[in-house]
Amino acid sequence: MTLVCLLALSYLLYKGNIDKFKEYLSKVEFENQEVTINNGSMFDNRQLGKSPQHLKNTDGDFLHIYKYPSNLLAKEASKSFKRKTEEYNMVSHNLYVVENMFIIYEYQRSLDDYDKSLDEIIRDYEE
Image (cartoon, rainbow, N blue to C red; front, side, top):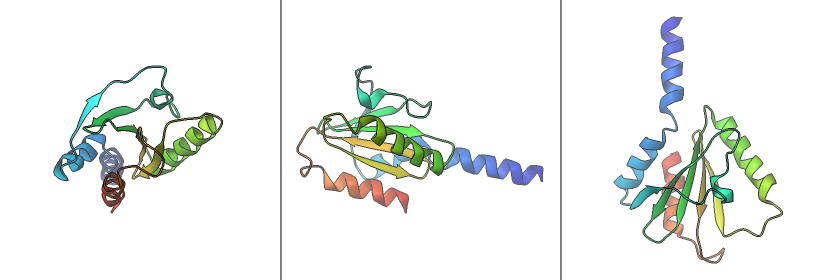
C-alpha cells in the first residue's frame, strides 16, 4: 500500500512539470527565456493560490504558466481567470489547460494574428 501511495505521489509531482514543458519547448526549437513581468499585470496575478512562471519568446510573446496538483484545479484556474477578466479590455491571449498546468499565451498582435505554430506546439505537448 505504501508503494502504491509513493508511486501515485511521484506521478502527480512528475505530471505537468514546468521544467519538463520548458525542455519540450527547447526540443521543438521554440526559443524562450524565463523573465519577470510587471507586478500590476493581470498575467502576474495569483490564480487559485499559485503564481505563474513567465517565458518570453523572441517575438516578444509570453507564456504564463501555472502548475497545480491536478488537471481539475488547472481547469478551475482557467475558469477563474476568465471570470476575473471578462470585463477588461485585455491584450490578445489564448488559454490552455495542459496536463495539470494552466497556460496563458499572451501576444501583442490582433486576435487573428497569433503564432499558430506555438498553438500547435502546446497542443502537441498534451499528446
